[in-house]
Image (cartoon, rainbow, N blue to C red; front, side, top):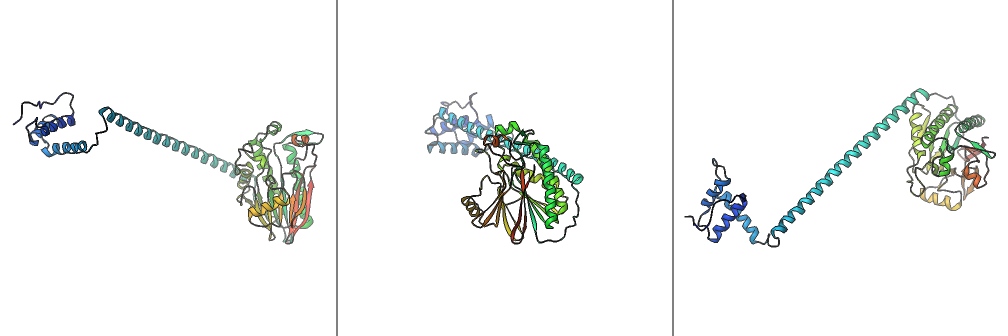
Amino acid sequence: MVTTLFDTTRKETENEFQYLWRLGQAKDSGLLDMDWNGIADLMNKYFGDPDKPYSEAAWRKPYQMAKKFLENGVFNNLSEDEYFKELRLQKQEIQKEKRKLYDERLDINRRLREESRLETTIEKFEDMLSNVANDRYVTYSPAVSNSENDMIVCLSDLHIGATYYGFDGAYDSLIAKERLEKYLSEIIEIQKTHNTENCICLLLGDLISGSIHKTISVTNKENVIEQVKLACEYISDFVYELGKYFKTVELRGVAGNHSRLEEKEDALLGERLDTLILWFIKSMLKNVKNISVIDEDIDDTLSIFFVREKLYFGVHGDFDSTSDTSISKLILWAKMTPYCVVCGHKHYPAMTDVSGIKVVQSGSLGGSGDEYTRQKRLTGKPSQTVLVVNDKGIKCCYPIELD
């Protein structure tokens, strides 16, 4: 029997759960004299399926569960406004996380596009270099007899791109090319004199002028991209011709300070364009069987190699001077002791002995006449250095002037 004191009609503003809660509360308080079967009939009337009405348990159990939450204090500390505020905050957090996920996806897609473009660019470079290699640098078989000595050919401080003309010196890209051709002819004469068998061609850094200072940028004839292209072409031609006079030629190198991409304070050690030039040349000379290009070493600033079982170090010289302290620090850092350290950077040829270790310094292709040497009142002829070496070490040292 249903009491007439309680209105069981569903209100227009009530949803399913609000209506169920009101009926359940009325039953528990005694306002509604009705069992759960009767309540199920009312709920099915408004919210159920007429063909498949829910059982009384389907309505009773949700109500009882909600009642347990209430009785155990879940909602005690939250007013209705606070409850909805909490829901809004949770919704905002969910939206934030969704936005973060969306931004992460955008970032991932952006990086994938960039990597794809980079891979495409690299593939184009490789195709271009492969075409150059196939058309310009074909293999040959030089007739060189066995000998008791080899040669170390230094290419140091070429500064391709630098341009200056004055009474104390002149230099530009064409002059650089002419001097490399003269240097090559001098090397050939030395090879004939000593009947030298193999050659190590050592790039000692600062192959390009770069743009590390404003004064350098202003005096450069070519921009950095053009400098890299010219350096690749000049050195590839030089090494290719060199290979015709030796049984084997091994090209290796270190990076110099002029090829860094940013100011000294901001530049990363591994981001120097000299390293990129070596990689380009490796692709260009890949078809020449007696020429090998070593573009992986202990570090971009140190090349380690053996000639006739003697250990040699190649460094640029910006981190390593020819002093006792500097050579000692280099040896401790590399954890091995060389017979000889070969360097550049200072722009003049020199040879010394530091605690039993030979130190050979090669000159520069440009000589004096640039802004720096004028300001410092420095003079010097353009030069490069060639070493003839055997199993005992350095047999001859040729500082070759290239006027």
